[in-house]
Image (cartoon, rainbow, N blue to C red; front, top):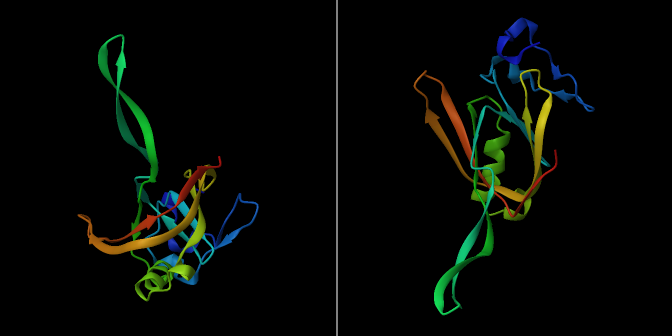
Length: 167
């Protein structure tokens, strides 16, 4: 069944095709989660998102001047490794898990908020396409953004200390 064609009555209560079925919350049927493409699984919760930005790494560039046969050239070397801040978006739902995760940081409980997580890209049949392990991640921001089609988007910015593509 194509996720974009689901309507309330024929929507399944779990996602098929996984080794461990994911049971969706009762609020799922009324929430605008149609068309999700990414599953975020943390120790605290699982959530689905329709968009992501900035999943990746980058090295600082260190310029080193050297002499080669009497000419000065600049050699560029890799410096410190940086993990991009991941941005995830979805239609605002009645589920409070992302808000509760962010609230841990706001309340100063970073040790509870900092978790390892798995981000999985899903195709239209909800089958995994690719996945990444996020190391020691936590939400640095949570925003509500109105979209042009009248849907309120929930946007969470996730910072991490490591990123590994696992499939």
